[in-house]
Length: 510
Image (cartoon, rainbow, N blue to C red; front, side, top):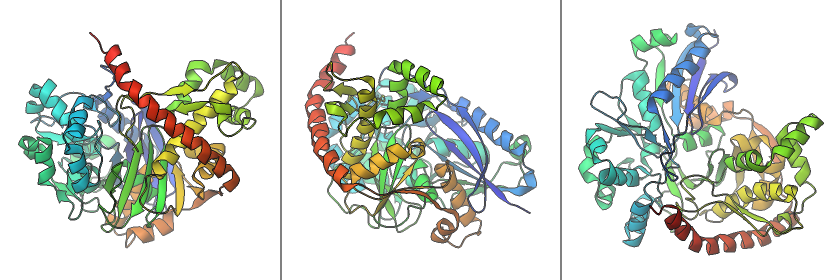
């Protein structure tokens, strides 16, 4: 009898349930869009009840097509960071605050000024940004204390979904490594709570388990509602970035993974935490006990292309339709005629509410095109947009502690051969993609399969389930050109930083 495991992945823009066989092949998936809520420019929230209802819809879509006797497990991952609060009855206190939320900007500014930020990096390996739980909790204390007091647990999103499916309140080491974790023994770091002034809320944090131990059966009454057997084993974790690394086979020292989605997350496997003094990015525990991920969690991902296309790309859509082509394929043909550097146009892709968080942290950072003249055309702007994301990636990898052995591209960006080759050329590094689309969901079904004993360990599971799709070798002559324009990219945003704070002050005047 064929056996299947469902992987649930709740991201920023959608939630999906994906059915896999034990070889890691994607069999079926159902996704539902999620509604972003923006109370203010720098705030990004989502309705926890909506997420749960859509999670059930996605699972039911699978069980309606595949017999429940064949489904043996569910693995859960979701966006990390943010704040998801529940009350005594385990009901949401308010909307969840997403990872790209920027409301805690003033808190983070204070922590940078008084040395808290540097001290936290020394003991956790993470440069704090506005989407971390600690800053949002402090903001809640100042602005919505009644909601903070009402909360029983301060959760991550996958922890909330895990509770809804199993009735168990837990978290795992990957989520809590941002940033309340002792990286060495993977328990809570009490000093971090005290430094942030949130130790009074310590008892609201759930117990930590490893992703391998965070396993419980589905609630019996829910199993019936969802069309599952009551003996289905549910696992929670790792969080999305670690799940994607596992699902794409990035488990060896020096190997890297770039997730080009709503954000652009760049991570390198290391075998020792707190090993560098690069005060940028984050340190996340990997699913293996002897591995960590050095993470540069840029916010500069695919929404930049989507925004450009939606805002002033209507003619591109019309022309692509006339040509009978996919609009993205059509755009990539247009930019082939544009030289590296987009004829002097530089795009800085800081489009999301949280600004930018790696390799520098500035919640007020905003996107911009510079260097435009009357000689430029739309295709120059298109290429500059693609290159802006590539330069942001290069900027992150320039701040990694080890030599890059290889980069695996995941997320929506992996579907573009033109972009993947651009990444390889910009980095000067061999870049690959692997088979499959939903690598975060794949990571948690790999974890579930290891927990259930279908593989003896994670390395065996990766070797059996992950297969290379395409390889992109770098053109080093192009790499040299990219490095010259990278200097312009970097100097430009360093100058722009002086204007972002003034801009924020002006638009927020009452």
